[in-house]
Image (cartoon, rainbow, N blue to C red; front, side, top):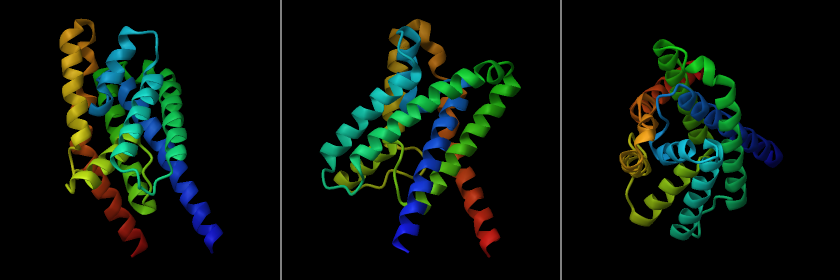
Length: 209
């Protein structure tokens, strides 16, 4: 029984990792920006030889380090989270290379890929709720801030999303070539993902009922 629980937890963890990596890759490949928290990473990838996926790994590692300082007694496995961050970053680069040409071909394809990316993120969020495991470094940091402050910040627009969006806008302001780092994929997911999550949750409840 214990082995089955561990195996299921591992499966849900890796499923989350894959969904998050592919979701971010699809959102970014559409050429309409990316998630608010990763906007600075996208902008930096445009003006440096370092890829978006590698910048995501670097930012994610910083998020995990800060989370560790804020909530040192958290039960989450720090090494596992680092490996997950690396895996997500690599998936982002691979997915971005595979889908870039198709996703940005037209406005309709951009909208389609943004919507699919949101749906995948909602699926990852549902699995996170089921497994009670945090995979994405921004979620780990948000959880640590919640523990430290006593505030609940994970409904629609995460505090980490706000920080990412503001810092991304400031970077884009100072680096004029990177204004396209902010777009549809930056503003839509924080509001659409919770709705998709609700639809997935309702669908699962009906199937199980």
